[in-house]
Length: 152
Image 1 (spheres, rainbow, N blue to C red):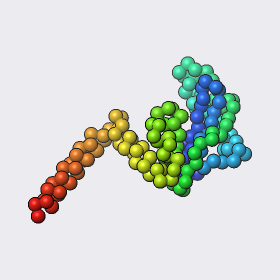
Image 2: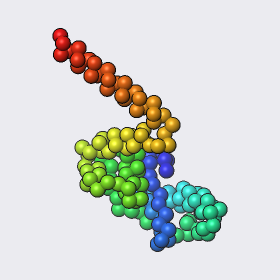
Image 3: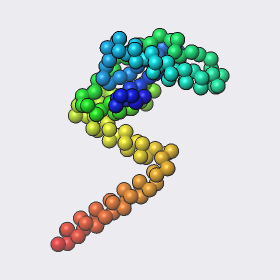
């Protein structure tokens, strides 16, 4: 969720009937509860309604709410990267090597690049083929430039 120039992630743990806030700028408990009240309620009502349409009857806004203990961001503009990583981690899709490295400031840019590459090359990206072709063209032009330099 994006609010007040900051990304944060709300999670519903269906098995344990709990909801969590994953925030890279860890709010104190009072602020999180106040924020969760109006914002979380709307989000969870919407998700509850969607689930009800799918045949799952639950009221997420009535579940226990917790602030998850997650790694905190280092820079002022890293919240989007951390939100993506939290979602990957929660879903079990974050590669083991990433789990170790993204918690260091020098590796945040590496994770940002990995996320961007995954989005660009995602099968549902309608521009994927054009991106691949442009990369191939650029690579061929680079090789031609190298060849010209060697001949000179």
